[in-house]
Amino acid sequence: QVQLHESGPGLVKPSQTLSLTCSVSGTSVTSRNFYWSWVRQAPGKGLEWIGYITGGGITYYELSLKRRATISVDTSRNHYSLKLNFVTVADSATYFCARISTSSDSDFFDLWGQGTRVTVSS
Amino acid sequence: YVLTQPPSVSVAPGQTARITCGGHDIGRKSVHWYQQRPGQAPMVVVSYNDDRRSGLPDRFSGSNSGNTATLTISRVEAGDEADYYCQVWDSDTNHREVFGGGTKLTVL
Image (cartoon, rainbow over all chains, first blue to last red; front, side):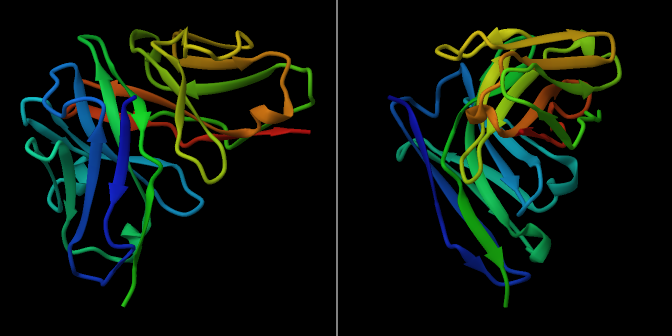
C-alpha cells in the first residue's frame, strides 16, 4: 500500500525557511512513472500547486514561488522535501505532498498525504 | 492558464449536480477532478475527463468539450457534500499544474 506522510514544524517565524519532508512508503521516489509534488491550501481557500520533482530529479515550480521554493529528493531515505525561503504570513497553509501520475498527455494527482498545517507567526 | 469554477452549487438529494470548469479551449486538454471533504486531503474522482476512480459510484461522470469541462453527480446524496476542484496540466507554461478555484457542493 503506497502512502505519503508529511512532517515538519507547525510554526515558522517570518523571514525564515519553511522545511517539510514527505516520507514515501510502498513505492520508490526514483520511479519514472511518477512525479513528487507539493500543494498547499491556505485556510478557507483553494488548492495551490507549489512544484514537483521528477524521478530523474528535474524540478518545476509555480512561477510565483520559483524564487523561494526548492524541492529535492533523498533516495536513500525514500523521501522528498520542500524548502520555502523568506516566508510571510501569506505562506500559512496546510501543505500536502502528493504523487503525480504522468503520461505524455497530462498529469494528475493520484495519491495525497494527509497534509500538515504550517503557521507563519512571530 | 486559468480555470474558472462557480464558487457554489446547491442541489436537493436525488437530483443532479453539474459542476463546471471553464478554460480557453479546455476541450483540448485532459481535465481531472478532485473531491475534498472538510478536514481531509483531496481525492481524485475523475481523471482524463471521464475516467472514474476505481470503486467510485457510477453516479459520478465527467465530460469535456469546447471551453467547458463538467463533473456531473447524479442522484446526489448527503455524503457527496464537499469541495470539488478541476485541474489540468499546462504544458505551455513551465509544465504547470493548474487548479480551478473550487466549487462547494451543498446538498440541501
